[in-house]
Amino acid sequence: MQVIIQPTSFDAVNLAAHIIAERLRKKPHLVLGLATGRTMIPLYQRLIEMHQKETLDFSLAVTFNLDEYIGIPPQHPGSYHYFMYNTFFRHINIDLRNTHIPNGMATDIFKECKEYEEKIKDFGGIDLQLLSIGESGHIGFNEPLSSMFSRTREKALSPVTIEQNKHLFPNPNDMPKRAITMGVGTILEANECLVLVTGKHKSKILAKSVEGPFTAMISATALQLHPNCIFVADEEAGTDLEQKEYYRWIFENEPEWEFYRKKIR
Ligand code: GLP
Image 1 (cartoon, rainbow, N blue to C red):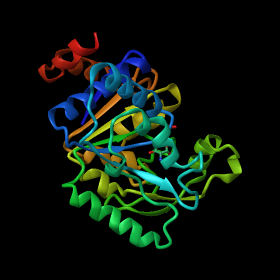
Image 2: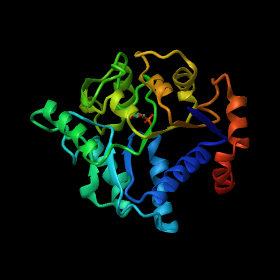
Image 3: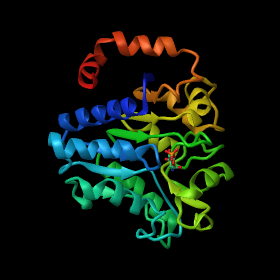
């Protein structure tokens, strides 16, 4: 695991976007795991800008979203289908047939989850999984006590998550209480994970996720087991990290970050 701290949320987003762009330029058929939530909005905006001004090409990319609410249709403004289409997909040249989001309206949710896993395998697995951390420490919708080996499945949302996300619904009471989410095991199988965390309100959960003990109470701690995981945080989110100086030294000195130091300054 590597932790990179950037001065502002703009810088953190910009670095994360450059990491994604570099992976996509190297492999146009990249299988990209996508996340939703407020943290992702400026990241998708930056990628759209790169598409428009720097010809970043998504035409061959394949995407798999982490999760979707159960019981609301794709056109519902609170759904992740709606979020992804309006925040990202419609602004880039991705082929919508190559985008995948769990179907929260499926009549057989168990079958939907099983087929989602199979589809990921059919595409050869996820190359780069984008993530953020929810205030409950979840990745995707893997709420406390999610098995570290869990696969895509139906999950009941925790009160913390309902509180965190209900304001994203035109009528907060409409927020579903269940979702389909990739499992922690599914996420850990991605070749690489990129976790973007911004804002002071995430500083405690970020420190627990990165430096705290491995526990099913905080599914983000599972990322400590991933052999190829990068956390990018802004200074505010990094406030409670104990080893900040070490992480800063890594970014400033390690040769593998030289390319990005030049790109973002
Ligand atoms: C939702 C998603 C998570 C995401 C979280 C972060 O709960 N299911 O995958 O990490 O939002 O939300 P935000 O970026 O709004 O803090």
